[in-house]
Length: 110
Image (cartoon, rainbow, N blue to C red; front, side, top):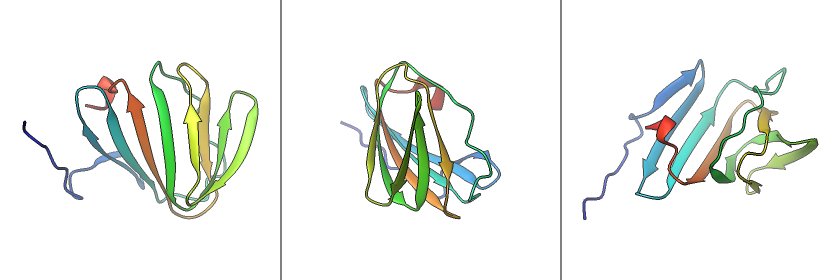
């Protein structure tokens, strides 16, 4: 079995001061999203996807919006996003790092 490692300099710039690094196997994908654009005046656009998502807040504070709920989260918190549920985030601190896990693999990230 070949194991692929991702280096810190192998990241995708999503927009100014927001980057993503990924690692994946056949059936799951982990993305580390770093926001260095906070605090955000408004939430990111709401979105949904067919993938199940579990996310860990590795650094910072943010608001997590899912359907009609708003949650304040901080370092160490975990949030869940069932398939096809509308959700988004809004950073509160200057820097936020999220570790997002998806199943199945998000082909749009590859």
